[in-house]
Length: 417
Image (cartoon, one colour):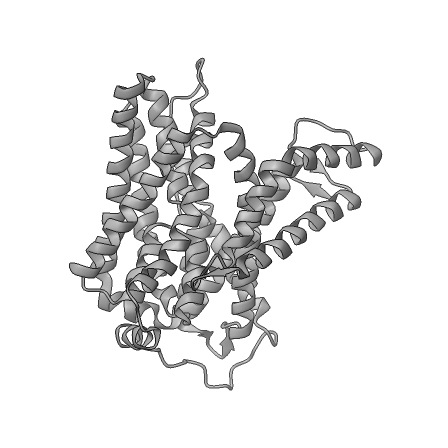
């Protein structure tokens, strides 16, 4: 079986699959622990994955090498575990984002038309304050510790991408830093991303749970307010349409395929990425729901299962790799910078949305998830809110934040060269 230039035996694949399900099982158990009404939920999987990566990544890699040697596989420089984790992460991302797009699609364009200016402003505000907090930390670190400005900017822009859990910003920063020379700036960006990723995930997950608790929000009332601002769109399906399969797997696969294809196109250093491509295509297909007499809308049960399964796989793939980097390169000062870059844009964005844009609580928090480009937080917010409709605010704000964070990351790298 070919895997990114390397050959994995059946035993090696079974070993990796065993690890994935072990992390998932333990993670869901951890996520069920509730303290004063607050729990990690699916993000518990991320914590277990981080711990697994921190303490067992090296033994896992070594054990896999042993298995491969026993099977007579010629070993090169390919990192089999890293590639396998990337497959798990990307598969999970495709499942989750495509499901969210289909779920939000029917009411998305109506909601977007009503709150278009608010979503644009909020997405820009969140990323702008993320960039300003990053610039402030760069200047502070340079003045306080005297470290080389270009190295510091590479590290902290990596921290910014990790704080916002933004793969596009991470890729753009690596592409913009100085290439070649004695210092590997791409590696520095990667280290920063890995250090900040932990709080970037957990911080937003806890935020969307704690804010309703502190506000003593009545969720029934908040769901009613959300329905007023994002009313349920009537189904375009009449029941007479031809379904390609009972669960909608075919339509789902088609949209995911088109989304991956759209996300692969690059415009300079910018691309929609898999996330953006799958999200936009599934929103469009979810809006129209049918092509002629053919239904292109998967069953709601299918979408809910794929959304949760996708989130679980994404958190495992990202968490194990992030845990390995976190322990290897951890420094307290960088971790604190990452916390600052997560909290400041999130808090400023929430206050701006509440008091200036006058968004209701659930629209506000959904937009925060999109502005922070936080996939795990959206999954948590759906559980906390008890409604899928919050995905609409996320989907509306996410593309704005996606573009803004790429541009801000590149600007900061160029500014501090």
